[in-house]
Image (tube, rainbow, N blue to C red; front, side, top):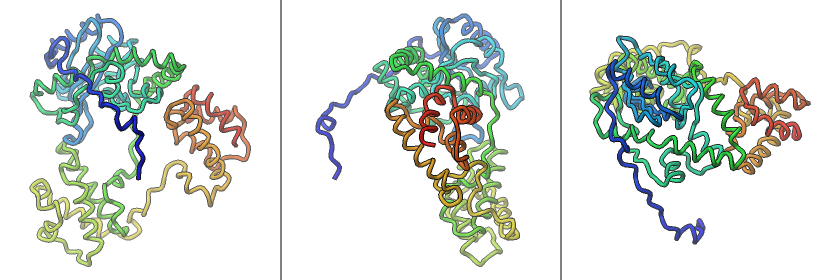
Length: 422
């Protein structure tokens, strides 16, 4: 039986007023060259930091491109820019003229790593930024979503009813534009509140180093995931390499269709249907698959799947005709160090070293009131300790962590602990 603290059980539920409408009303959508020029001029003439957000169409479109970009700056108001209106026949718009006018300005984003890739696509990137989610993590706050932070900092709640909407829809409904404008309405005030908290806790310099790192790497190319088909939901239910081969070929076929149609892969064919067909094939001796047979598998009789039926049949045929030498491996071979749980037999010294250092870093993070992954990336620690030498001094540990990307504030805190327990 779980015991509940009586004070917690009887504590009243706090209800915060919802921020319902922008103070200046819903701004018009910026979708003409004249309107864009006016927005650039207004934002350049404003003062203070600029709040920035993007809306994408996750779950609807194949790409993660921005379909709306929101900016707000004191003295300039809020501007809702439709980047698709400025593509001029190209895959993405070029908003570098706006970026140039905001160079040197602090951009406020929430969870910047989610927005920066699609901003990079339209050449709209900051030279410096402030990430309210990352700041909240460094402060050790229990909830770091934007609505929770607004409640704690400003006593206001944000409605999130359109966060998963299809932002590629045109025209964009007015209530969606209202929602989008509110996401940047009070970011500047939230930033000021967080700066005060970071200063009081001695963490402001840590945050500035983190934000500088994000800005410096905002335009880094995305590293493709190795064998992304292995992320299929339910793949672990397949028992054979043949089943994995079928799943892989179906995934590749679905990916190509989704790319050509600019549709989310799951809307072309759900993961569960891909895995179920692979499971049926691996457990069946029948290799001469036809339309009737495949339509008996859940999901393949739906209109979206029927439209591409020949592609699914061809994918299965390719898989069953593969030589066994070309089947995928049972598990993905990692590019870097394996997970520490696999070290014990081949690298026992590193395994023991990890099990001394990791708990100490967790303890240090708790004392500093921040998540251990923000104190030091698990990948940075793993690369430092895996197959490591019997001895290491602080200078060498600092150098290796710096090469991995660990920031100075992190190294100053963790290197003494790591060397002490080496």
